Image 1: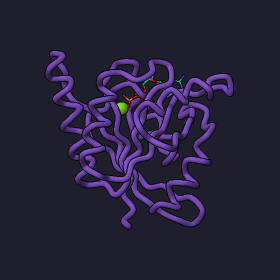
Image 2: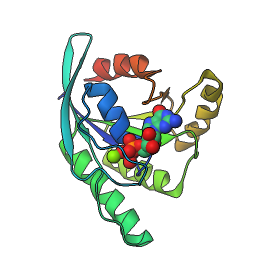
Image 3: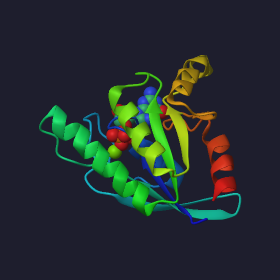
Image 4: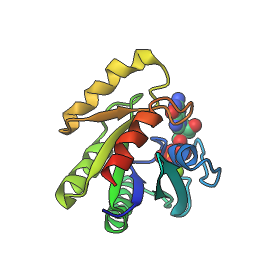
Length: 163
Ligand code: GDP
Ligand code: MG
């Protein structure tokens, strides 16, 4: 398999924060405003002797709900095309949204390997809540906190195993 990993998911789930955490860089722009990452950003990461590239997706102008969904679809389709493995990021604080469902459907149809990563699990108390995302139809979830780094070691172990 190749070694390009793309982080996908709807705006505000924490894609850029996770990118920064996994690359040790501060290149991706993190903002309170949804969709603020302007371009696709590429970084390098290594773990257990394996090196891989990470792509942060996002960054689009949103003027309407219709455009919003369309923009997410386009981002995910581009990511699927260029990546070997996807990190499909969701947010424990919101649960599954319609946009998450849309992303899940695109990934399913593509047949591309994807890890469902449940972000914002900042404390152990939130781990049980993350199991709600099994409803997306996956048999494995990776709860993480992109902000404090918890869970990212287990995620990286599984990821480099799959490269
Ligand atoms: P993106 O739009 O998916 O790239 O999301 P960002 O990385 O820009 O993050 C969106 C918001 O979620 C920002 O306010 C981040 O600080 C916040 N955020 C990201 N990761 C976490 C996390 O692990 N825990 C918490 N509590 N907030 C997070
Ligand atoms: Mg972003």
